[in-house]
Image (cartoon, rainbow, N blue to C red; front, side, top):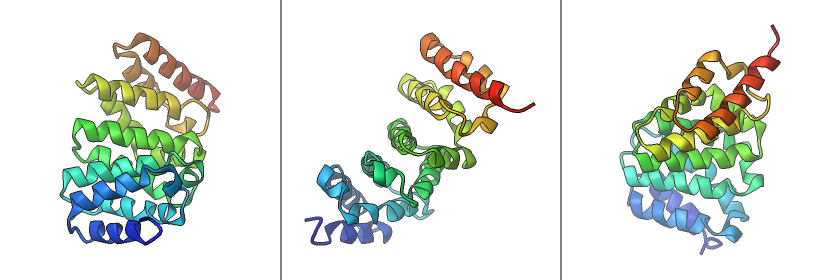
Length: 201
């Protein structure tokens, strides 16, 4: 099915906002297949899915959720997570987190971003430059425990080396240490404190 151009045809439907939910559901189902993620069609899907999330005409909440889920599927592949199009996906997913998403969408977007930074420091920087650090700090304060914990875990991942140390601030440490997940929070704070200590005076 993927070899016959199904992914490309479904992406065309998605971009033109025709049968969005159905197209997005089928795209996600296809890209959830390991063999299809290794095909050329998978790499070519990154930019259209990112543009769909950034498109102001995109109104379908379910379509947005499934597009974010599809990106998360794609970035389980290390090669795709390191691709040049991955930077645009970082920005699209941060934008999704800023745009009043549902709680489910927040968790899906954070998981997709986690896949992106597992293999690429450039993606960490793209997330930080897109305002992602502050967005995540805001999500740590969420009343939804799943979202809050997921955001805290991701902050830990972002700051576990010195790639984006200039984005670590004392405010970051204060926000994280104010939460009620002592073991997770302590670990996050330790990573950020290390980044702060390694910064030049």
